[in-house]
Image (cartoon, rainbow, N blue to C red; front, side, top):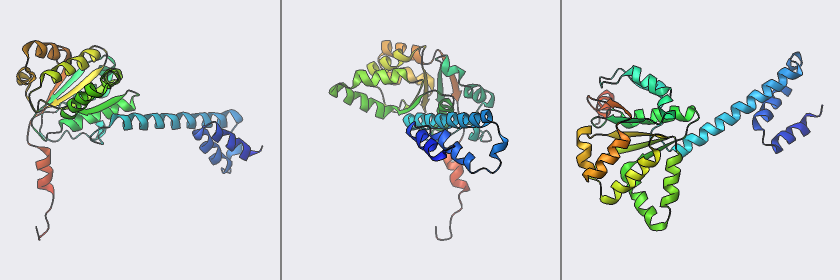
Length: 251
């Protein structure tokens, strides 16, 4: 068998997984102990693995997560009221396929955004699409999109994303345009796609921060009534980590 022409053909066909596997097989001393079917199966398995890895890297790149977080690294030892059973349930990602939401609220530094990114990373590993959006910057982007004609295309892209994180909810009172844009975004996703919201603001103040009572009712109806809730408490983890950091004599 002429191996080099075969390798070139695999490269031409962009079968990089099979190309690598065949190259390795050629250099294996005991490869002849395997049957043709076994060797072909190994090539096919490698190609599938390579393609899945590339798709995962693409999903993670497009998600633009703020933290490189994963479910397995969540710290349950810190006293912040984190329910491990609920996190494990959410990590199965069934709530995302069912179009449900998640609200994570609590004081600054307790890990709201980190947990949200960990759940989004798990969603990407399960073959779902995700996107991290910091709400103040999202509103700026939508305002610009109204002016340059990108708004419909941008909203259509958001509507197709399986999981969106809206981080830093409620840092400032919403304007009339922001209320309308947010309602349209949530309405497009309601019942079909999932949204994670992180906020320092307790839920009872959300109506006030949104502003207009009618639009506030409509927004919250689409967001919190079909949502899991995680209420984190305790001291900022950033402060705890700072206390553990040794200082040099010169400091």
